[in-house]
Image 1 (cartoon, chains in turn red, orange):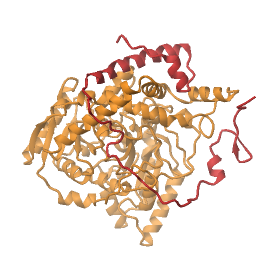
Image 2 (cartoon, one colour; image 1 turned 90 degrees about the vertical axis):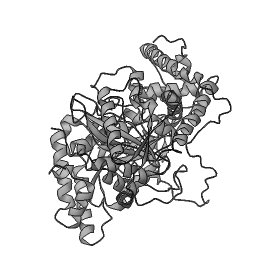
Image 3 (cartoon, rainbow over the protein chains, first blue to last red; image 1 turned 60 degrees about the horizontal axis):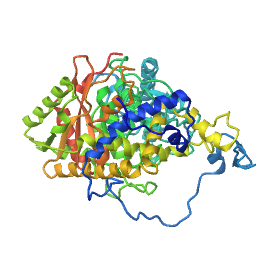
Image 4 (cartoon, each protein chain N blue to C red; image 1 turned 30 degrees about the horizontal axis):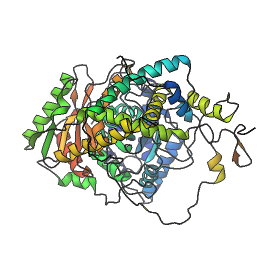
Length: 96
Length: 487
């Protein structure tokens, strides 16, 4: 399907924090172009005055009592950390 | 039902366990032996722990001996899709991103199952992060269809469906965002149900699209679906979208609700693209209901043709947000190549996610991005309102809707390489997710190829008891679930 709606793949990949190879950029922009072409059918629908639906059964003002609950113990919370040191997650340098 | 223990229903097995002519250890061992003999062909599981399952079974037998049985699931092996957290067990979502992740806590449905005394058995394969309709997008390899190993089992809960069909678990849980329970149930010849949005807690379910995701059961019989739904349904304060309403006794309702019902046939679900054999099987089911005294009414859901488009905007938008958490920092895959923090995000995500997940994250990012939000995301949410209204209008006249579950029986592994072609597999199931409705797929025949066909019944919000009764009325007049694949 020819896509008349080219997606700016560099910008989208940047926003999505995904590193793509040149071959992936070509492939994904073509595939996403096809999907967007299909999705543009939505333009045919008259939505004048229609409220958007975020949830099928909207619930409002769901409150919980403000009572402290036990959280995960440090060892459990850090169990899956790729690198940890002194009860903290270690990451590469953020500022010079 | 066949004689093999692993093909018996929960209802029958629990009676035998109760009468002590079967132990949970014997039953669990039978399921383990069956899994050992067929799993190399099926690959329903990402992992399982035989010793742990047998220890749970022994504990269940001890509880029963002490007179402390937890109910009909006591001692029954239940498989879980590998997106449902079990404390101290692997939780991978079939993604490289979570290949080494071990869950630090239980999901709410896991806690509820543990209370019933069920034996939690294995982590079942899926399309990565539940994104797909064939289980081909799994980082651990494709699950095969037990009826024909050259075909897909459907997806994303392909492992959950195939395990039941192949006798590798008695019943299982999956999750359904756009058809991920009903579509594989149809393709594997088992029963699968997506409950009303909000009936089952999503706490501890790895999120794909939060306004659509719902956990639900797979089984060989509608009664077993009722038993499993009973165990997992109910309000949970840890899920703010969980509904506060009393949960009826579904199994008791099956005995009480006998119809006849008013059933609607939405004409939009019987058009172009429907396989003739699937269409004929569904028409035969409609004729059966008519013969049982049900009133069959033609109805229209005029916005059906926009379901797929609205879904792929809303689901990917929510996914792009939900999957932002996988950044290589606190858990999940971290690229060994990254030297600074920006690289850490870009490389970890590039290495950790498969192609379909990347496509959906990018599509979702795009439709939410500045300049496109109104045109795509907001518009899709408005179309969702119209789609939901279509269903509610239809339910003024009828108790439930009858449609095919899928346009075709299972297709060959590798046959659909174009993402859009795969998206079309969910064309009949997506509407119930957008509208938040309960829907069930029950086996309704076999194609000439020998592959199963599924009948979808869509019910009114929170009317699971009624929907299960309608499904069982069909099941009781047919013996499709007595057939099992030759493995």
